Image (cartoon, rainbow, N blue to C red; front, side, top):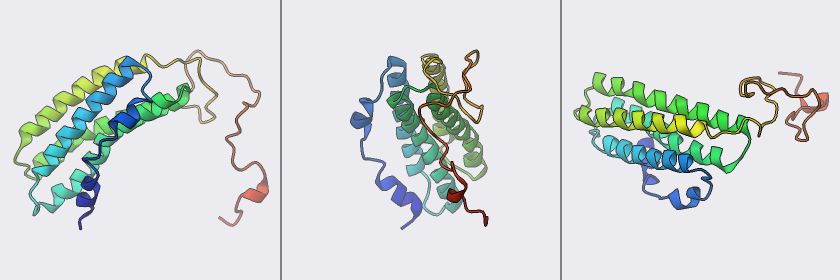
Length: 181
């Protein structure tokens, strides 16, 4: 059985009611629902790929993953309150959205017959992007801990040099690390 087929065996499972309870804001709810519309459109788009077009079948795995990321990461971000975690999820959503935009070129290059579906996908992504911008404005930068990587520290927020209550350093002592690598 193809990997694509295995992946889509689970596409009809409706996890939305379970995940909706994590959505705390109306902006998050709107974004989550638009992500669901994109998943439905991508599923239809993939169903139209002929079995013999192995290249597009392979590419379809990537667009399916990206489509699901749009919804899953909203739920993940909304489940917590930390700014840096929300921003990390937002960055992954942005990456998935951009990948979906780019994949339309692969579909055209490899002879996808129903390019009008790709136009619909781009339109839905544009709608999603507008909702995304409203959603990230709901993130509270004061609900954050210092991001030691420096990537998701909110602008204008200063952190003390004191250690946070949460220890994210898994390798505190040398015994935990494999010096042989």
